[in-house]
Amino acid sequence: MEERDPSVVAKARDGDRDAFKTLVETHSRYIYSLAHRMTGNAQDAEDVVQEAWLKAHKQLSRFESRADFRTWMHRITVNCSIDLIRARRHREDAHDPTDLEHGPLSEKGAEAQPTPERVAASVQISDRVNEALSLLTALERAAFTLRHVEGMSIEEVGEKLGMKTSATKHSIFRAVKKMRAALEPFAQT
Amino acid sequence: MNHLSEDELILHSYGEIESADRTRVDQHLASCIECQQSKEKLARVLTMIDAAAPVEAPAGFERTVWARLEPALDQNTGSTWRTLFSFPQWALAGGVAALVIAAFVAGRFSGEEPSAPAPSAVAHVEPARVLETAVGDHLDRTQMMLVELANAETDGADVLAGEQERAVDLVAANRLIRQSAQQSGDAQVVDILEDLERVLLEVANAPATVTSNDLTDLQSRITREDLLFRLRVIASEMRQRQLQDREAGDPARRKMPTS
Image (cartoon, rainbow over all chains, first blue to last red):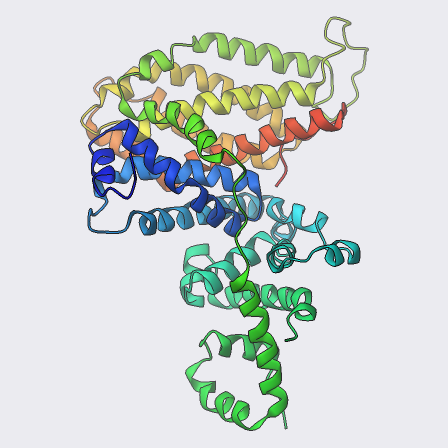
């Protein structure tokens, strides 16, 4: 069953398990990439994908048949990523506010700081950008991704992440400065 | 002449300069070659980010997702929930209690040195792992129950009544684990267990005649407090931590998931 067939979504909405499986198989790679960009690591991205599909399954009856399914899944995935980041933040706030800058989503990034050897070995722009993204904290990454990639205004990003606008701005500033420091040597021309 | 700050250049790139500053910033940029060059450098970096390909999912990812997802979808149907949760909860509570007690006997969670050597029968128990396992198991089972409740039709209030006995057992297990976590100083585990306990108590103490409003209230609470997602996060961290422990062969871990 091809997902291009518009009836697939309709069948899934009517409870057809095979149709829903087709949707999962068609879109999971896309939403994984999106979730990874938001969260910064594979484990969290996998959890977000799982959560996004569960929500989609539950809310499928509300999906407008004229809308684009991938766009709908995109929105659910972004929201699930934000939920995860906020849930972490909620617990980290209660535990130790300084963890926000050194939380689990950023630990891997800290380990993955590009050494000169690794940078020299990296010939792909994508590798360099992903290395640079891994230097951001969870909050910086989320704020930057929502502003730069998702195109939300800073105010909207703040609302999504439960932060004041000024704090959101500073998260984005720090993110862009880190990205700039890491990437400017490779972006000269 | 005062040049534009990097923050102002970033805001300008995103079209987010405050209206009060816009004229000043625009005029300065139009006349200052140095700031123009800085903005161009920034633009090149941002373009480079746009050009980067996203991280790809591992091979066969779609199949893995479906394998994980399909059993969870079954829980949404409502038809299989009783068989899914047929595990005797008294056994869980008893098992957890035994594990936690074993952990205490080993004398590691209290933070105090035991005054006497631990009995040999439990001396080999690594309490952090015992508690991790117990908590992971408990979280999984609580999660299954909450999924069922969260997805129940609001006119199926008997679902809530049917979960009461299970909730009583889960409350007992929850308390044991929470007390252990408190003594071991795992604040975030205590935090989620406290929230869970309130919901479990609500289910356990629901009135004999449960209305659809009771169920709706409970579902709202589960959603409002992000309970399911917080549960998944902490359960996921727990699995990750156990995996790391096994890989590292670290026998002396004393903490549960960090964050």
